[in-house]
Image (cartoon, rainbow, N blue to C red; front, top):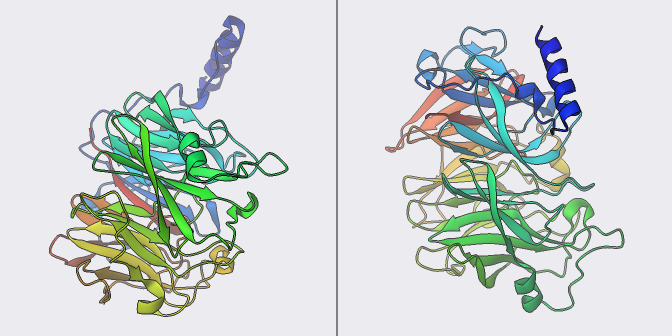
Length: 436
């Protein structure tokens, strides 16, 4: 009967000239009471990272020593698969993703807003279009508050940042960076021979600190594989006043070319409760020459890089090691660092390298403390840290059945707790708590 109604609805819309959009969600009834089944685990299939499944559950019902098969335990975990990747931002009853990842739409970009229906399943509640091109560049998302957010849409606006309202999912305007980039660097090659964009804005960093929007600028040598020239020695950020939408200046950090990795799921900046904005660089330049992985920052009250402070992962942990995820929580930096040299070629094999978890006092950045949390596989498609209920939840993804796979947490006093253990066929990526 439902299929017949969908067909009749579609036929009617076509006859009346209306736009047919998101038909699979026509019959979704949004959840109104978020007092239970309001925690959501996002997982990737161990055999295929392009398959993301979401599981809604009650954290209070979980026995941390039980190893759960999330599909089989359908009385505890309600699964859903809205065909989107695991986003890194949430707001009230929503969380956001920037790509569809299956059902024939691999890497289809878009700004997708998810919530729960009255059956406690995740579904796409609303979306904003992001243009698709052949190279699938990464893009970042920044949500300032309930009425202000930013995202990057290269397909239609290669050097512009779009402004939107996260509550109404409507566009509010654009910020054009091209004039500032032209003034900053002359004789720029904007596109390659095939018309692919070579100057990207907001593909690596999009974050706000003290009424300033920080937007990465990347000058590519080749659009394919996001290659930056070996002659390039700096990482660039535009500093934009969010009250006027004007570019105030472009700043450069010498010694690295990139921040994070070129995937939309990974957020490589964090605004600390000390007011500093921190950046995590893996150091990779894809198949070209890279730089040492490092953490650097812009201090509170300033709009320039702090040249007197950094965490050099090579020097502290060993040559070729990288910091892959980062979070700031209650005065400390938490890092996910490889136990061995980790190259771009290893990124497609999560079993190739293991990762450990560390905490660092930013006032003593050369003295990391190893956390009592099991080693994990690599996590190139996500940041393993989520702050929920004023606790730092840490995803520990492992494919091998002999290794722990699930979540730990750390509270404000630094106490570590094992929260949930899950079967290794579901690699955890993020944890959300949705509330209205």
